Amino acid sequence: MLGSRSLLVVLAIAGLSLQAELWFSGDGYQKTLNLRAAVAEQSELNDSLRERNAALDAEVINLKQGVDAAEERARTDLGMIGERETFYQVVPVADASW
Image 1 (cartoon, rainbow, N blue to C red):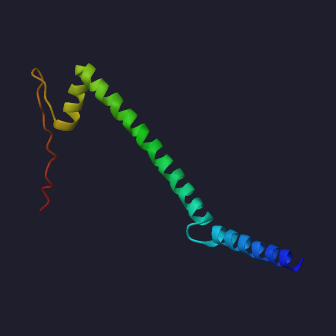
Image 2 (cartoon, helix red, strand yellow; image 1 turned 120 degrees about the horizontal axis):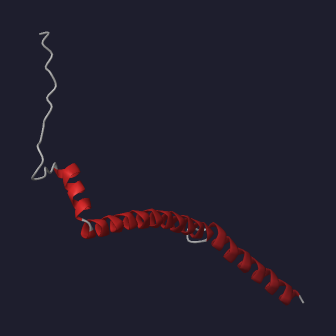
Image 3 (cartoon, rainbow, N blue to C red; image 1 turned 120 degrees about the vertical axis):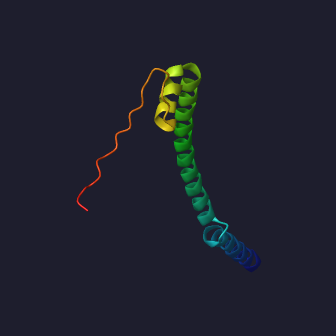
């Protein structure tokens, strides 16, 4: 009877030490929580990048299909002037109070 009781105590101590290792070690439960948080953060980043990529895809399709979109982009970004258009540059009046 004493042998089985001591064996039970030894097994209980071993089980508790394994549980303590699981809960309190650096590779245990805390690491699992950290990894879950990292996965959630990466998922949010992926969602925002997915939205950005969808917007860029729509812009590429628009530029491939429509000449107007490419022309508008050239006007705003590159300063394009059409063949039958006249460019006027307005220069502000210099302050003559020197």
